Image (cartoon, rainbow, N blue to C red; front, side, top):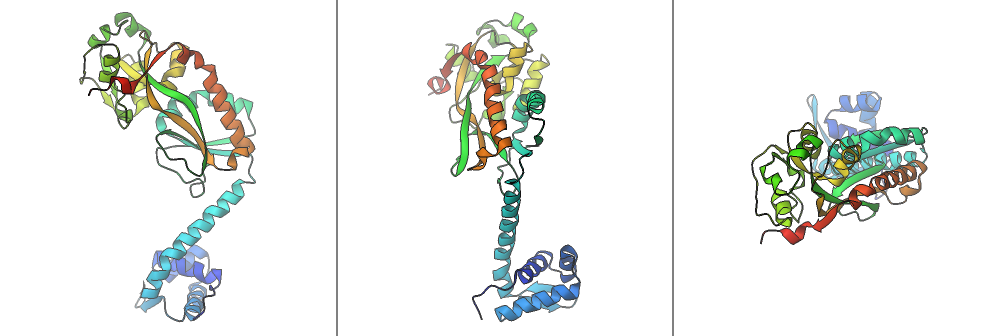
Length: 315
């Protein structure tokens, strides 16, 4: 038995056969004849010095040696495929694939994309609205916008604007509930998407920041922040809106904050990409555009009195 690896074609044939547990299906995947695939498997077994498959009547199964080999070949070919895609993307200066959470995509990105498209017609944008943690190589993602306490080790990461929450509502509701005290009588909307924060950022905490001992529990609850904001836009009630998700509605007047007292959440959205990829033209352009767009609504934040939510936690 030699430590020298067998030909890549033989390993590829084994990997496909081990995944399908069928020589015929593996041959179909690799666009070869079953006889050619069987020859490759045989050459691998000769190279290894033992069988990797038991040939049964109309079926195959892995031997102990095959079971030991299969996981490594599967991971190896996945890594090769990811590396190949990454290498291809280094030559692509026109396509930009971005992943962001559904709420950020709907409330921040989507309303502004026309401006980016107009400024950068050479960039083809693709979006994946998902909270799933992506792998830049495996999932062919160029940029990720993420919110929370993520560990960004080994990545290019820049924090975006600080996130706060503040009661927001339609102008019509604001006429009825213009003060913090009056909000105890208002229909309240609950956004449960930030319940994971280490420092609570909820209605009870906000009322405590105003010196009001009130812990509301009644009202519609939403697991997605954008759905909670849509309910507020429809006049259903008042929601503790997150800066990034309500700032455009505040700037455009669809929502108002009659009590401009905000609680800092202690977390931010972050702009992420593979380390070194930030120099690619379309990634740099998208990063600079996001930063410039955030600056356009800085006056909304400047108008807020911001308080640390941790200072008002119930002991």
